[in-house]
Image (cartoon, rainbow, N blue to C red; front, side, top):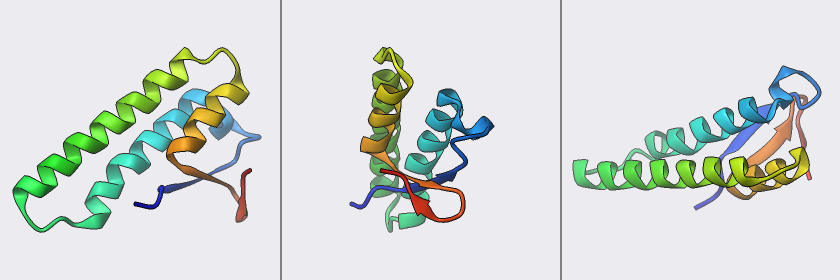
Length: 89
């Protein structure tokens, strides 16, 4: 499955690591809704998996000691695109 993409302004308030973590979590969870699973069981299983993945990402971010380290963790889970369309590397 392709990673979801978040579009943020890293130079502004959206560059705050907690804001980025929240945006990434929301993107991971909304990906389940976007995929539109057919059965209730499938939807619940994918929702639970998305919650697990989002929780794991948040835990890993909280274990880092630098902004760049936290950003690298978030990038493993979502694509980050700078507002204006430029992908972040």
